[in-house]
Amino acid sequence: MKGSSEEKFMKTYWMRPAFQKKKAASKSTLVVSLFFFLLLLLFLAAWIDLAKYAGFSSQNFSRTPSNSDLQFPLKCSIWNQTNTCPKNYPTSYKPSNPNPSLNPKCPEFFRWIHEDLRPWRETGITKEMVEKARKTAHFRLVILDGKIYVEKFRQSIQTRALFTMWGILQLMRWYPGKLPDLELMFDCDDRPVIQANHFRRPDSGPPPLFRYCSDWKSLDIVFPDWSFWGWAETNIKPWRIVLKDMKEGNKKTKWEERVPYAYWRGNPNVCPWRADLMKCNVTDKNDWNTRLYVQDWDKEAKIGYKQSNVADQCTHRYKIYIEGWAWSVSEKYILACDSPTLLMTQRWHDFFIRGMIPQQHYWPVKDNDKCKSLKFAVEYGNNHTQKAKAIGEAGSSFIHEDLKMENVYDYIFNLLNEYAKLFKYKPTIPPNAMELCAEAMACPSDGIWKEFMELSLEKSPSNSIPCTMPPPYEPQELRSFIDAKVKSTKEVEAWENEYWEKQIKKQ
Image (tube, helix red, strand yellow):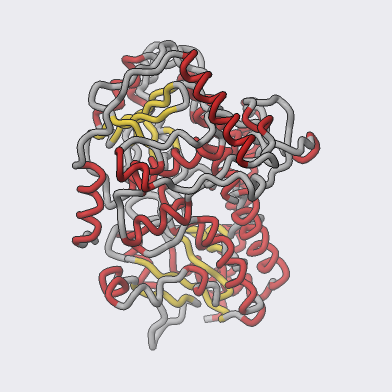
């Protein structure tokens, strides 16, 4: 869907004159400027602890937002007058209230960062490798001396590229000055394109390409999707707000009192397997224990998305997740409902699903026999309510806790930090790039796009340092983890086969 407002927004951002790069000030000038800025703050607000600006500390700190006295909202008046970024946001930050015991180890699924970057562990990343990734990329992003520069190659679907860049900008505001210099290529399309079998030789140099999902046959590096900062085209708000709304939505109806069927709402026309799912809907002749609904986004837009609030869709005991043309953004919203997710056999993975375990966080459903598999899953859950409820709660807890916004930022930080360690060259600013800051993106925009940017704006630095990365998997450890997931899935398949054999005997 693409209306005039969206087109206007894209033109406002992409077609305006490039944000001109200015000659870098000397280090002495920057130091003097920073000194006077800090001195001014001291006189204007003596209660601000200027030690917070002293830089990075290796200590651990409480994972709480900054004090309310340290706020940096958008400065659109400055942008509108000069088209330059304000200089008031700190370029480094030392969190206050140190408490080493409260800085946690990152969630276990962060270990997949090591696996995603493994193809470059021996060779490192060269300029030539990065340039090869340009073939399908929508944009190049460079971080240099704490600033972000972007070179656009082509327009993405809707505003995926814009909100992905916005998310990285918010990470820079969340952890100012902590990301090292790096350069990356980002492809905002759905399916992975870097096929592993093309780069089997040790010196083959696969191009490092970032995107939202990958698969076991590809080397694309997975990255959190744009909707964490809001999906304006579908009126889905930024993730922090959605999680809060989902918690309230979950309280409206106890699990035992929810409709005892499997629920799905979406667009069945994007791929054959979704069209096939619709055959499992209830009819006069068959009831596969499902309630499936077609989502018409054009119609929803006209009526103000009244039936699209994800927090209002936690009304059934079971939720169905099925991929679209590739992985689907809907995954995290479905899993957050306190209802067991009946997860259809996957072809692709995003950045977090590899850390979730069948029968613990979700219930596996066969893609090649959808209707019978769904019917059994609901029958089993309704006959084993304590187990079904526990699966729903565990999956939802994973989303609400392990995937809270602080951890999303920590995932991106650790991914980019580990990625930058592999560099064999020092990035430079591309000639056609523009510098980005929050004002450069949000101030010229309007409507829901500006609203979502304002809602997801990080107004102050984090009061903690990033979580501590877990170590890489040992080969045997990784095999055991995957084998355990396969075994759990096959166990469900065995129960399902036994169930249908008994049904046949009853006939």
